[in-house]
Amino acid sequence: MKISHSKWIAALIVTIGLLLGLPNIDKVSATVLPGGAGVSAASIEVTVKNPESKPVSSAKVVVTSPNLPFPLRIQLDGNGYGKLENLPVANYNIYISAPGYFNDTYIGGQVSGNYQHEVTLEHRSGQVEIMNFYIYDPFEYSSLDQIKGTVYWSTYGTIPQDSKININFFDNNNTVVGNVYSGINPNANIYTVPVGISIPAGATRIGLELQSESSVLAQVTRPIWKSSLYSPGQVLFKDTNPAGGVIDGVLNWTGSVNESQVTGYRVFYRTKNALNIEHHLGVVEKRADKIYQFTLPTLPTDVAEIGVVVNNSNGEEPGSWPILSMYDNRLSDPLTSVPITSNLPVPRIVEGQLNYPKAGKIAGWLRWEVTSDRNMLLQLAGQTIYFTDAHGTKLQLIGSAFEPRINDNTMNYNSLNINELISIPNGATQIAIYSVLENGKENDIPAYYPLPPTIQFIDWDEHYRSIRGHITWSQDNDESNIKAYYAYFTGYNVIPVEIGHVPIGAPWRLSIPSSITIPQGTNLISIYTMDYNNHLSPYGSPVYIYDNTTSYQVQNALKQKYFTGTTAIDIEQILLTLNNPSNPFSQISKEDTKLLLSLIKPIMSAN
Image (cartoon, rainbow, N blue to C red; front, side, top):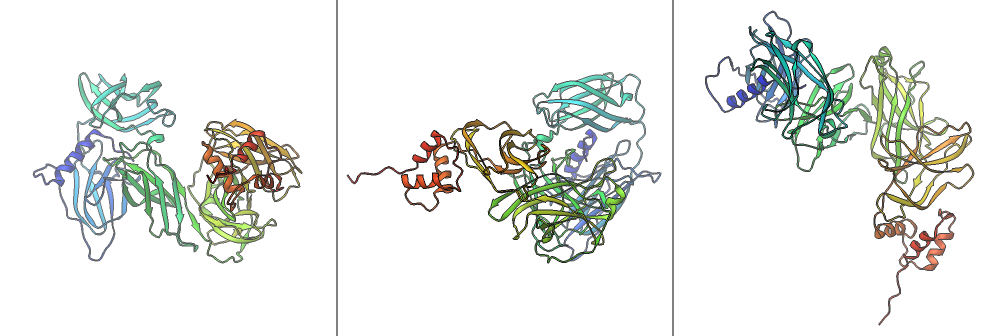
């Protein structure tokens, strides 16, 4: 969904002129859109065809309004059809253009309720155009100041024999500010930039120019979207309705690292059986604090995905954005028996991270793989998730994960995100995930994910990116096949680094007597188990590393952990703490002893 044609920029200038009421613009016809009393929402449907009644799916359709903070694109499908819904009742302007056609088609007026319009574009003979411009940049995430990769395009019309394609950098006004490569045969339709090219100062766009001798016959540009800069930050969805079958949620996200080209964000959802159609939910303007929230309306029961996408002032959007699989909070649903079936795919848990921010409450996420069988996926409603005991007996419903994107070529993944703390029922030792059919029948075999042992760690070191201290954890639910416990530094998308291990039967603790450096990219300590076949468990139980950087932070952390409620710490309190069997001081160092003694308040003289 990108609007990059130079002619389209000109059309937007025409847009501004129309909004200001400029008269006598050729080839522009204005139609008042139908209204309706008592309607609180509006939608716009557009079908674009040519004089031969064939769809023009490549047409660019943009909607503007004083009630919208930035233009919105209507993406057309293969039939030339597109829809923009959940709009406020207001005056709207619709601008339509396509390569090879007159590009100043305009519709304007009040929209109340659903407005439908079929547009027939007229051919423009003798015109040459560059179409379908796209660049694949492998540096999209890894480099902020270079661009590389493969450029694709196609052309429309009769191209003069002496013509050539130039790949250039442009500024926001489509003025050339640098060159990538020149003299490419227009009929090649593809060119690979072999090395990284530095992005010059002032360049915000990249594009192609079709040049014949000294004349530029056609130009097309698009923003230089670096996903590591312009993609929205962490996106979290919370279903605020604890009853099953109703999703009334809140979406929170952080802004892009660089919002210089960002006007705002668009929120949309997709349904299970129509994943190629984005249902518009609303827009949020750019904020200085980069903290965003969007209250969702009640969503349809077949919702599968929800996403957030960046927009700029031209209605252009980057090629990638975060998409969440939908989760239906069902904590208030009574636990009832459900009919079961067999031969449904058993989910395979790929990765997860659960933790206990508070005693008896859990938060975190799981991600699992279902199947690549498209026919089976179309039958599944998704997965239901429960707390169970060690024998697999269901204790409490957690929620339902609707079946997300269906792809013929890759495995299907789904996920559970527990953003709000959930109380763990008595006796719960694991989470069970069942495949479920549209009729509510569950598979008789679930996937199980054990609840993590409770892990605790306090950093006794006051230096940045350096820690020492004592890692403790609770016993695993079943130690019958456990040979040892292993502690690792872990983090997102990094290789775990071993800290140490203890054999089965030893106390569940590991001391770090002297300071060690926290490896780059890691922010967690995770405990894994090793079985008697020397296989580490695939999923570790993590605890976040609070890296203390001052003596005050260290002393305060120790007071809160070991001396809560003690009004005056003295030598007796220190000795009691050191000799307490529940405390992990089997390998306490001389430095740690000095640190504990420093907690004793000095005796103040009465004089």
